Image (tube, rainbow, N blue to C red; front, side, top):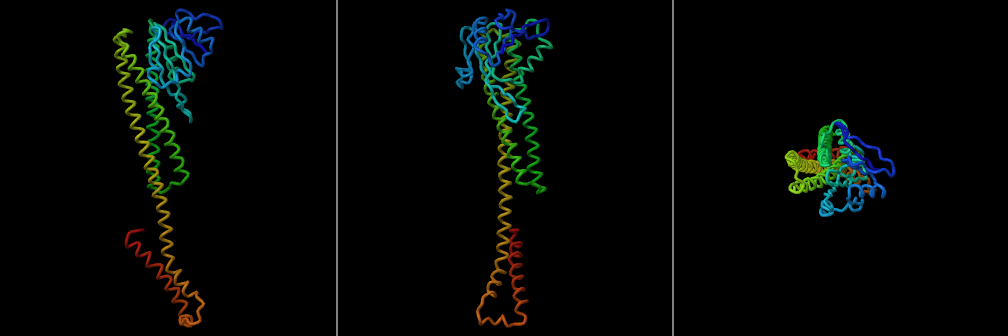
Length: 325
């Protein structure tokens, strides 16, 4: 699907494009979502740039993601998508800056695109260009990653309280532990995807900063690029902190489960040791030998019971004295 955005007054509005219709010269942003071959050729004809395929966008080499060809700047970044769902994913998005136009190629719906559309629909500068739209998109991408990390941090804090409060109250069950481990695993996966996105955005912003001389960025754009670099670095550090925090909670969770298991095994061991002497006494007097003088005693049975009770109490008292219980 091809959506063309043209300035109209103080807003940037999408222009419906019928099949076979030429793209207007006033268009500053051409957004390709799951483009067809015909749409690729139409954009290439007007803008004069080659639209990368999905396979080319997924290349991990920096030279394949950030390069100049035919006077146009090709920049591919990995963005978060579906981060509010149980199955967040990362998707490659290509930004092609050709003159005063911006071409975006994507195969998913990252939230920053909707945020930028709504913002520019309310107000956009009178001299809006593709560079302006690109800066707005990058700013929205960084803000979105920050929001995701804030949400992850709040949810991880809740999980931390659940872990240690349940340990203190001894109200945790195996199902509770499974739920906590599942939640931590999801948050760790989300943090790793956010970090991957931040790394790619940081490379893209650095690439744009190095193009200062050839692109002749304005003073405001240069300042905005420096701010983005600082934001990306701080968010990357925060993502690393959250990842370390999740790793700590996972280790603590495994340690608590091990402690619970050790307590259960210790309980069985103590019960086995306590019952061993009475079992020995009962086994002795359960023998069928003919000459056992205790069998003819009138107090033999009570004395055997008393011996079993005393032999079970003594190990328990000894364990308590050694502070093993």
